[in-house]
Length: 460
Image 1 (cartoon, one colour):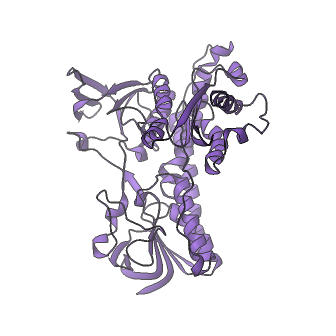
Image 2 (tube, one colour; image 1 turned 90 degrees about the horizontal axis):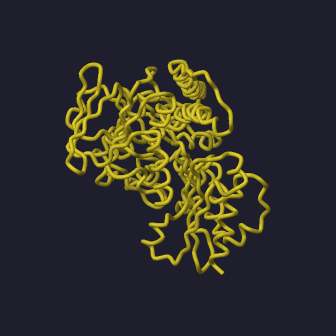
Image 3 (cartoon, helix red, strand yellow; image 1 turned 60 degrees about the vertical axis):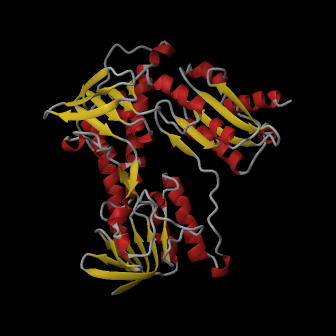
């Protein structure tokens, strides 16, 4: 039995614990069966944004005529070269992490699958290891729906879609969530015809105004089939065929030379042999943890996608920083429960979405007496300059306290714009406090200011 001070299972968000532990001179084992850096670096946030940015640039270029700029030539996309650059960049980053760990005498890096043998005993390769503290951060993977015929076809998940060097003439996308829409936007902008199969609505958890505005704009660029029943998938060696019936009972047939399946995720906890421990999972396979992110086994903690609370890199970073501070920096009697501030998110589609706090629907469900106000990008100085076809800021405000309960933005730079409102929701600012500051003219945040002014007027 080889003993360590800490063991980290998963080479993504769990790596936030490495530097604090090294500062204390602790001996660390890191276990990762794939590439270090996790989903974010290798098959998620980083490579997708490296593709989304050129897709956005090309989309903007194709719409230059609204500024009286015309280009009589045709834009060409060297898709294989683009993918190669992105893949090489993220691979180099991942390999750099591995090299630094291999050089450090305090770190043993096991490039394999770790499985529990007992509560605090893990099997790696042909040895058993243990530690005073074990951190499980194994993340998640794409969930594959049980659609007749699908398993027998060469469909893509997000992992393959970020690495494929073939730009299809027509891409079929099953799923209307963040991942499907981000990658569908990339392929569509880079000249693939796209058809989405959406069970209900795009982004069902977003605020209703944002969702409807997004859907209206997105449908102009991407064909969407809603509520397809009795779906079947076939592949004849060259082409995919999806068949089914729409809600009216009409038979639908769609063909394409590539298929992306983006219907959600499942935790990787099934790789851990947790049945050999007292660690408890819920009915969806997520590890149950307490207010200290500790499992039912003392000294075994879990964080990130595998606990099912939030599915963002910024959320697992927060959890990792919490654990590092509590376990490695504070005195034992100072350990505090984790206290999540309001959790923001963004969707890097075209148009972009940024969101924090309560949606209008959620505010209604929770019984708040609230005011919902909207202000469009078009009715601003930047709107006069950018001539946006879409864009709005929506605020949910408590009528009694005038505090910002929620904020939602659709349009250019929404993921950046939302940060002012992340602070406002986090520190429970009132609209009056936000209107005390001077907004730079003519910058995009004036749209937020205009929404605030509208709210103040309506709350008189």
